Length: 344
Image (tube, rainbow, N blue to C red; front, side):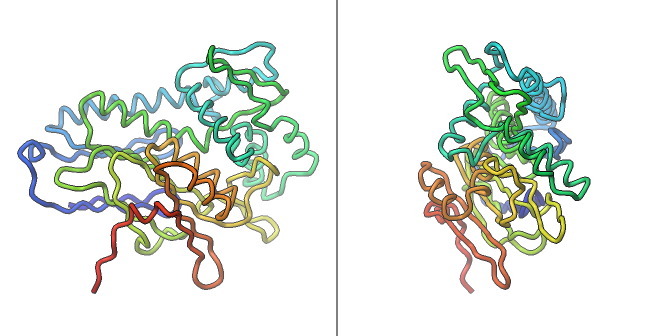
């Protein structure tokens, strides 16, 4: 049995091959469902005894994702995140729900570690570049300067004891596009585990989290492909109770005056990234992988690999297109996950 997922920057290919099953595993059947959630297709694959169990799990999982979107979306003007943004400048600390607190706390930690290469206060810049993609015009220096005054992770104050947030500058806008999807994947797997379902995969358009392996397997076999969406996988990894995500500009970019700008904005400059780089990250959970792939995209291969090597259990695969053969960079731990290529 083979399942094919074409998702994210490079696309991910999931191959399942049959071997002898234990008695308890033999009673499990594979079920799959996809729904549009958080602006992308969310695919869930799980192994349960029957269709009734699968249907209940899918309904609960997609309901949870929709609930998280109402908290974390910057597109929904009524979301908790949007209401927090619109409070800027805050004259008092604002209590946060557990999901929003968790995501913001993780975001601030990575912002400090990367000295602002990852920064969820980047929202004012992101809005400018969303308009630029429509108008095909670079944001003016005046608009960039106006946005710059409202960007900076140091202007987001979190109180660990009270679990509150305060935005210190006017016109701040938080954007969780580089981390919220990974958190939603983790929360979906957590919900499934609470229902007794441990053999599952959740795929949010290339942000993939997996639980225990499919019956009879050592792990979920996932192929990482080059920068284009065509071709066969250049690397295959075997994962269990882990996550893999991708970031890059293969599908989201704008060409202005002959120059290519990524949808990923460097929070330190306010400019869309022009150094083309594709990043795949493996980590113990999807919120970690999702945020790291964005940070590495901004930092570039050298600093990005230094970051990934400092994080236990994380690994990265980086591709930079050049004339001729692309440059490929791998962290030391990445090889631990790679499926060896069969020798002829």
